[in-house]
Amino acid sequence: MAVYTEVSDEELEEFLSQYDLGGLVSFKGIAEGVENSNYLLGTGTGTYILTLYEKRVHRDDLPYFLGLMEHLAGQGIACPTPIRGSDGRALRELCSRPAAIISFLEGVWPRRVQPRHCALLGDTMARMHLAGASFGGERANALSIEGWRRLFRQVEARADEVRPDLAAEIAGELAHLEAHWPRDLPAGIVHADLFPDNVFFLADKLSGLIDFYFACNDFFAYDLAICLNAWCFETDRSFNITKARQMLSAYREVRPFSDTELEALPLLARGSALRFLLTRLYDWLNHPDGAWVKPKDPLEYLQKLRFHQGITGAGAYGLE
Amino acid sequence: MAVYTEVSDEELEEFLSQYDLGGLVSFKGIAEGVENSNYLLGTGTGTYILTLYEKRVHRDDLPYFLGLMEHLAGQGIACPTPIRGSDGRALRELCSRPAAIISFLEGVWPRRVQPRHCALLGDTMARMHLAGASFGGERANALSIEGWRRLFRQVEARADEVRPDLAAEIAGELAHLEAHWPRDLPAGIVHADLFPDNVFFLADKLSGLIDFYFACNDFFAYDLAICLNAWCFETDRSFNITKARQMLSAYREVRPFSDTELEALPLLARGSALRFLLTRLYDWLNHPDGAWVKPKDPLEYLQKLRFHQGITGAGAYGLE
Image (cartoon, rainbow over all chains, first blue to last red; front, top):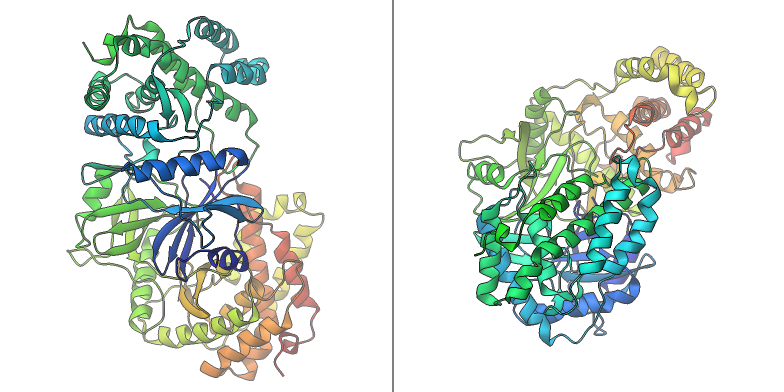
């Protein structure tokens, strides 16, 4: 549930005057996304998204994110593209925050994921990974293994408030991941947050990927690992091997992956589960009373972590 | 900040199949309104608002609200009009809630009210009052004077938690209003919740009124009294007589009001201030910890109440 910043009439008018988008027609806060303030902006030339970047997004990263979206859209990946103002710039200020207008994507994110969604996701994710190769920007994944240790220090003392012995369980997993995290898998641009609400579908096609504000350079297979967790578990938290098989099969038809990548997948899936367990735990322990955003259950990701700990190999994801 | 109910893909598809609006193109929760779940719905034929009515709206009142919108839109008042399905019905069920699709209105509500907004509001409000005369529906104002006594009983014991002696101050005011509330002013359909976020403007014209879910039959001047409170105070809570004069003057050019109505205005304005003081106080004392909606400050309306208590007559609103 976003919209943290109210934009006054004068500020909006002044901001829009720096674009060639025609006059203001409508302006509505969107109740989606939790990081930024998002408005649906109607003008004489069409519909756009106006985003004000709130404190969780680092200002210095914005040229990378916006540049990446523009690059990927130019390569034919369905994703929002930043709109440049009359001065050629896409990133400017509004209400003392960095702000940008990006194109509006048609489509609806799936409230109930079906195997066909996973197949379409695998295909588009692979195309995105390939299309990223020609993008010049570099950004380390701040929420990869070094970041987890840092996050763990911030939640360690209070983790057991959420569940007995949780701190010890995380400590053990983190040590295991630090000892075994791979070093030399194929890498490039990954989205790193491809949850269902960031993927739009329209008439049985994938119509777009949104929200590139965690994108970074990391192992391609780590993006797959995130999606195994985000797309292939049911609401009763059981793993759906059909969804996983569809996603991985469709992916590898576009970008064939090596046995090494496939074998690394269970470990990467454990890492991805720990990453969301840690960030959700942090938000759970630190959300202010009466906050507008309901924190997500961290223990959902503890269960996913345990699933990947318990399998004997990548065969559990449905590929031979 | 609305969107309380998540609509699944299948439910949405089934719901839309009952209309002739073309295929689904987009579907986004809107972060506006606090009573209902609102979605911006794009289809092959255009943009609409899909509303799911949450518990605060009584199901039995919905035919009145939807019928009124359709009537007013038919009379040329810029307001949303309910869209009827292939079966001719505008009101149906979605996710076990009453739900309706209404037309989308262009425009933006004013974050910073200017005197010209108040003039346009006065003009349109008067036209709406006249247009309501030919509407057949009847609905008592549940939040008029009898309702305040009921509300006061629910907050009386805890009102002083918000401010010392608040309960006694409200009790005194309520007794005064009960003794002096008028009985025979010109009456008809009123909106009863014309706050700035329910009034859209576009290129210096008023482009529409929305959110008729408090509409009822009451004194026309009570609608003006609500707007004196909602539009004519500055953020520092001082009264802006220019805004009031613009609103009242524009109103009476369309629907001239009698001296009796004008003289009743200070009392009606006190009543309207008490109404919002009481409902805000109720929400303040009863909002759950961690609620998604930030309650509004009740004491803003205590200050407005005291302003109207302190004036000597309707001249304080800028009319001779």
